[in-house]
Structure formats: structure tokens, C-alpha cells
Image 1 (spheres, rainbow, N blue to C red):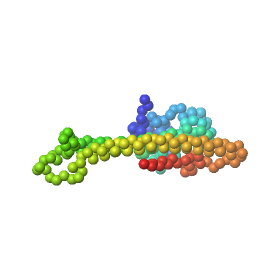
Image 2 (image 1 turned 135 degrees about the vertical axis):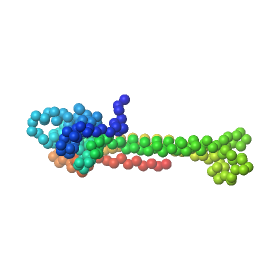
Image 3 (image 1 turned 90 degrees about the vertical axis):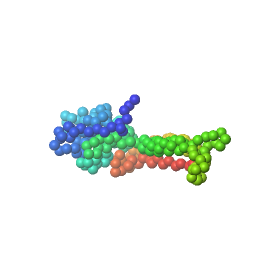
Image 4 (image 1 turned 180 degrees about the vertical axis):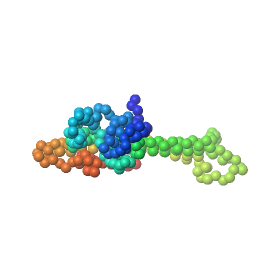
Length: 243
């Protein structure tokens, strides 16, 4: 099983100290290449190996002419922050993002995807709901004659109970209802996410075909893989939930 790289942080003090100029935009990818996030089979590594003995400096131009996995700096605020994207280049004007990494104060992290963030938040909420329900159920007792009652409810010396305390069965019904609601929400999220991804892939394929047709006709479409100019084939995935 592959290691979850979103759980680790990488830093090389020795590498930083060996560079008098420190970490900058010219050597940040060299620093990133020392980390476990790097792919030795990527186009950056192949092109660097092929050009290390010549005067070719503009590697980005040649990277756009290659297909396959590559790393690109998409945002920077030197000398503190760099954002690096791992992507699969399909053509000179088309890329498919795979993962995003960021370097903050010389520490390298992998950014989690949206699915992982939402899943973690939901699991955290369910954990505390589970604790709350179990704590409340510890105060419930059952008798064949009276059914579910709160502990001490039949005590003549106990103070007057609230409506919720008089009907502990409501707590159980609410918990069962919450479980059903969560299951329905999860199923709908999965279905709509799958539909949205399928539709986006179809739209992207259609846009790429249109671009190829326009290129053959001599009228290239306006597309860019620059971080400041989003690709024309990109499409937002919007999920709507109707309960």
C-alpha cells in the first residue's frame, strides 16, 4: 500500500545551508527534487538530464512540448512560499492536475484534496456525536412495564423533568434518524460527484476535440496552462443536494 504523503513534512537543513543564496525561485525545484514527493521519471528530471551539458536554459518551453508527468511552479511569494503542481501534460496546451504541494518556510507539504477534507470533517463530527449519544444513553434505563425512562425519573425526591427528559425514546429515534440521514447524504454525494466528474470529462474531451479541429483549420483557440490564465477546457464541479 502506497504511503499517504499528506501526513508527512519534509525539510533539508543541510541543503539550505549549503546554498549561500538560500532558497529562491531558481533553485526551488532542485530543493523539491530532494524530497519524497519527487518523481524521478518525470519530464523535469528527463529534460534536466538531457540538457545538463548544454546551454539550454528555458526548460519550461521544452516541457510544454513533452507529454507525461511534470512539476510546475504555479504560485510563489519568495522567499517564503511556493506552490508546485504535479500534472500530466496531454498536449502543449492541455494538462491534467494530479496533486498540489507547497513549500512554506523551507518545509514541504502535500495539500490534501477536497474529498479528504470533507471526509475528515464529517468523521470528526460523527465522532463527537457518537460520544454525545453514548453519554446520554448511559442515563437511560428500560423496564418492561414502563419502557424507556431516565434514571431517577421515578424518584419522588427528584426534581421535575423537562419534556426531553420525560421522553428518552426521542433520543433513540433522533439517533436512528440521524444515521439514516447521514447514509442518504453520503449516497447522494457519491452519486452526484460521479455524475459531475463524468460530465466534466466529457466536456473536456469535447473541448480538446474542438481545439484540435481549430488548430487543423489554422485558428487555434485561446488556451493557457498558466496559473493566472485558467484553461478554457476547465469546468467547475457544482454539487446540488436535494433532500
